[in-house]
Image 1 (cartoon, one colour):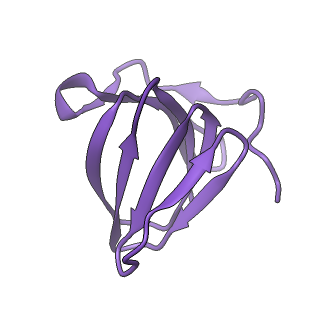
Image 2 (cartoon, one colour):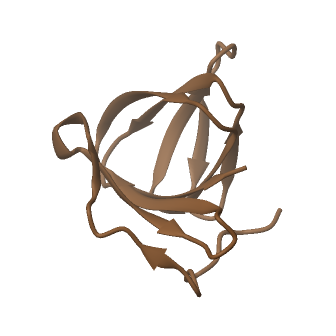
Image 3 (cartoon, rainbow, N blue to C red):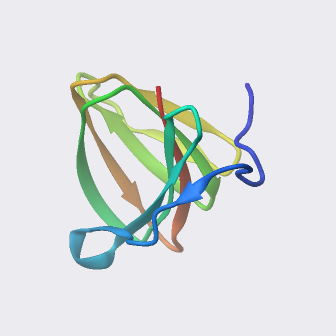
Length: 108
């Protein structure tokens, strides 16, 4: 399993934050010269539902969470250094307990 990078090089960062769920999920978008993008953010404790347009890889950079991807009945736990994939035109639920979880989302 390839882990998330420690830093993002050669990117432009959108200064305006992506803010969801009354500030409980916040990210910034990193744009690459080739047109690809990633978001880097933090999820504060709580449970949240996200829809996806494009397929996504969610690397957990710090903290931990539980995830249930649409179509699965079971929750899976992910800790720092692990990741999960979400298909495009799908959805997932994510739950964070205790401290915040930090993530890097790669749009595939």
